[in-house]
Structure formats: C-alpha cells, structure tokens
Image (tube, rainbow, N blue to C red):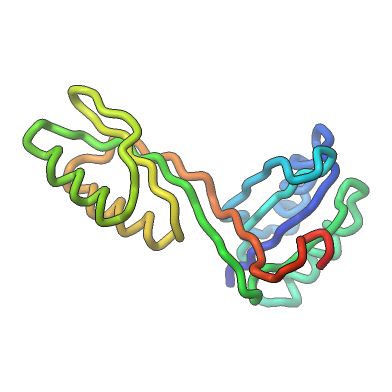
Length: 165
C-alpha cells in the first residue's frame, strides 16, 4: 500500500540524504519525494509517498525516522482528509495542424500552455496523479518529447498546522 508522510525537519544540509538513505536501507520504495521551505525559515517540509506492505512496516519506518536528530515531526496523511497535488510539465510535438486539438485538450484539463515554438508546446498541469496520467495518455498520440513531474505534495484539511498535529 502507498502511504503519504509529511516530515518536518530542520533546514540543514544533508538531512534529505539521511532520510532517503534510511528508507532505502529498510527496502521500502520511495515513489515520490518533495522537499521545500515552510512558513518557518529554519524548517523544511518533506512529503514522501512510500510503498509498505502494511501499517506495521510503515510504523517501523516512522520509528526509525523519529530517531534522526534533525526530524521535528512526522505526520501520516494517508487516512486523513487532505488535499494532494502534483505538478507536471509536458513537452509535446505540436505541428501547426495539431495545435488546435492540443489546445482543446489543455482547456479540458484546465492546464496551461507555458511555451510554444515551431515544433513543440510545453504544457503545465497541476492535479492528482490520475489526472496527469490521463492527460499524458491523450497527448501520446501527438508525441510526448519529455515529461517532468514534481511528485506529490499534500496538506491536511484540518484547521491546525502540521506542526500542531
């Protein structure tokens, strides 16, 4: 099963490396890993999606992560009411004959065209993983040149912050 964890850590060099190596040593697959600043400049939030057999295995990972000095808090967002999104940039072949059709697909998915040249278009799409997958499937017919995806970011819909959970 896939689990979404939010890990609050001190904003120091090497913290992300320690966390990812600890998870890989435990033979868990990190499906998605994003990190960025938070509302507090000395804290970084890491959102990761890990594959674990069951909640007991996940708890082992959480316990190991908790032992790291730079980890402030770990929140399992898997079962919570939450919002999660992913960002994708998709470079697709765009002949003059295909551009109108591609623009229609972009509008249906509420995406944005962020760059156009003679041969390609770059499309920006934000949404759930399934939405991005669906758009990529439709764009395959035109020839996808490149895809860049951020991985999942997630936030609880609860009125309190992750630090207070």
